[in-house]
Length: 170
Image (tube, rainbow, N blue to C red; front, side, top):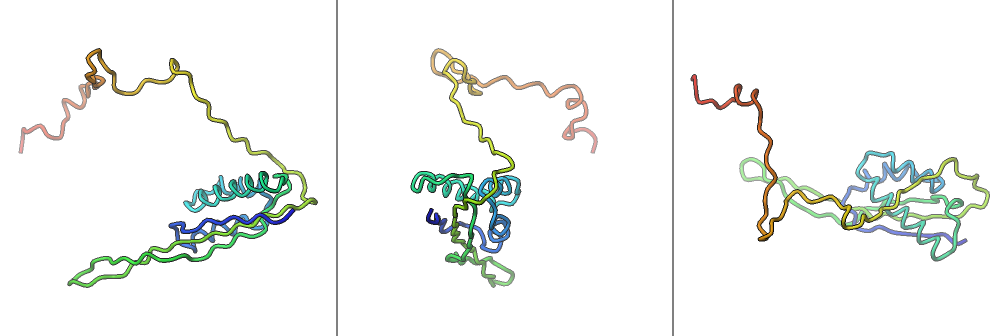
């Protein structure tokens, strides 16, 4: 199989932060890389995960590759253009702000000697409910088309007795 190269350009995150997440998955099999990204709480993990899934789908469709034999050969993060802004400071001065962008290049290769995956990631399919089983929205409509708001719950005895704004006292 030839290598599968995918790119994500103009990602509005700094390259340094994206590289920190991207370096975790270099050389890993696709399934383990996906699990690693799903476990990350960093913001850069989500676009890299989307890019990885896109690359796997593209490799399956175009080159008839087996997704269990794919691994991440390389992930390169380059700096894109910068948005230059200014932050007003004291006495009429300003500080420059650089909002950096990233270009991500992901390369997948197929390795026939790759051991079988240790686990499988199951992504549940979204199913649409039939119209009669769908949950109703918060607002109810009457016959004339007027909207009726749901009744508010009373705040209770405690809130009534110990209100901060009683108007009494001081």
